[in-house]
Image: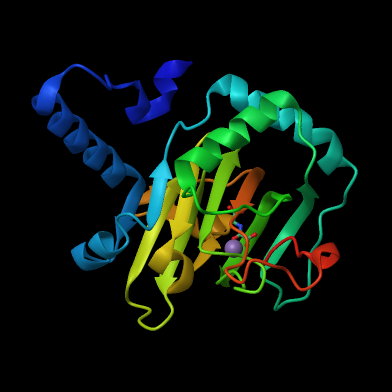
Length: 238
Ligand code: OGA
Ligand code: MN
């Protein structure tokens, strides 16, 4: 339903400056509900760099993506990698052919998260974490991923934690409800690691966020060099 779209449902036109500032204030308030950090400085620093848009997907859009992805994912087995691998309990695919309905959703992601001058990797990364699955802290390799990462979360809520790679006491947590979009760019992309907490550690502050199976659909900007070493070897998780 359209009301799930958060700030997008607010009047956009014809309400003058009062409404505009109220709109901005509301947007800020809602942001506070989905992002928490170690202090005001880090919140300010990542204000435009780590963004959550809860309710970005309508229930129908979520269902569209899910029904398109499910048969492809079901063909694969969950992997439990070597202890030092970044992702545990997952299966994944890289998808370049999408139904028209899904293409429209991905186009909305592109418009919401990427600048007009940014080119996206042609293959969209789809990652399916089983309930015990999790992603350890990492920074996506600059070799395979440019300045912006945008991810849709489906099925289960989860917590993404960002930690300053130079100053680990500086951190941010994003509450990712199903249907939400997150965007990492600038310092959030390059100066912070990101991770998806495992079920036992899945808290947003005091709030327990029980983890079930989670599917993410991740769009990435092309590496800044503008080319990949070997396009055939574009990695799934970079
Ligand atoms: C990754 C990653 C986050 C997500 O695959 O590199 O960080 O939302 N994924 O699944
Ligand atoms: Mn990553």
